[in-house]
Length: 335
Image (tube, rainbow, N blue to C red; front, top):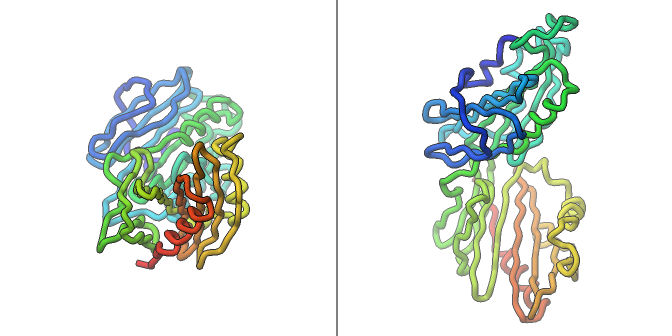
């Protein structure tokens, strides 16, 4: 396909750039991705709101074009919009393809949600490969966060080439670590957290907690903490479709290497606390107990995942009771 999906791409000709995993995006943050060894990368900013990449291995068996676009503050993009936008963008290519139908698949991502569709140029089937005129392309469109869109085209002749898999793996590692703080803020003596695509606001009362967000937490994440008595409360907002129920969630969490050996959860208990589904567990630590709650809630299309924890030499039952009391004070309201 000699014509690139210009509806998906903001740039086509890029100046040479050095092979690297981190790329500074002035005014926004750092773009990170794992580039296969031996692949070349060209990159540049596109105006004030975009950043573009051209990535390919030696020999040019595959060409990967990626554009990131920062969306205006008053025009967030919901995760469920990605599929529709991709369909509109590739409509012309579907009509001239072997496939003749728009049949996208979920795109594997480090963070965010998106879709990818493969289309084969019917006019090139059975013909010898022609440099720069690839027979197959995979078009992808994803929402990395509420105000950040990624569009990508992977072009090639032979889907069985290992470089095709490496190209898709590259896309799955791409993420943007923003330099600006996520939208958690104190208000009326409480902390409030939301994301533009959600209809919910999580409100945490003023119980001595202070913001403690790590730099790599991402815009869907917040973290609050206090030291005496210790309490750490962190949370994520995700689309409701990602929640597979408390049992499945805990089975996945408990397989983590973080719970291996002496850190294995003890006194595991599944509870209902109002609208929250909760897994309570303890971890034995030197000199006391580290008590934990994982609290899950689905409402208005949003999955809220809270993690409350505290470590002390006091009785484990007391720590659990205090965490449950803190959870009961969390409010969730609709915008």
